[in-house]
Image 1: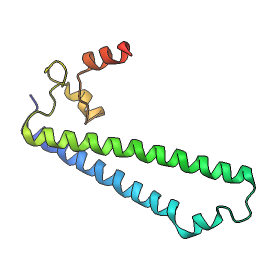
Image 2 (image 1 turned 180 degrees about the vertical axis):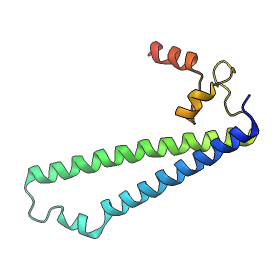
Image 3 (image 1 turned 180 degrees about the horizontal axis):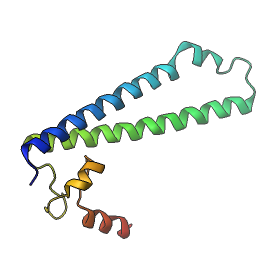
Length: 121
């Protein structure tokens, strides 16, 4: 079981990571929807340029979706820290190794269960 000090450290790291992701995503969204950026769309651009711009926007929004998923995983981990279930595998109820949590602090599964899921797919 993780000590209270270690849980507090993880809560701080997770909160900082969440804030970083939200700020970065917010800034990227502002750039994407700025009037300057939108004015160039359709203003004499060739079809290929418009297609490139649309594809670029698509990739950007997919990245934002991934970042949103990570924020939700961080929120879940923070909830688990509060309720005392942080570091417990959701599949086997065993402990998730602290080394794994240091690498992926919002890990839901221990290494064995994660590998089982990955090989089953």
